[in-house]
Length: 63
Image (cartoon, rainbow, N blue to C red):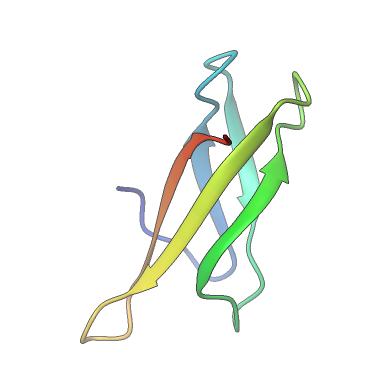
């Protein structure tokens, strides 16, 4: 699960497998949908925060 650095994370699209830099607003946590910048297919994005305040991001194909 990639960690967010400041407000961006390098993630791999679950469809086209391209590495994409994803911007995530610093106040965001929870789930949202984002389209791949390369193939335009939708991702389900989940941002979580651990006890130390570190944010992590999970990307999966959107249903």
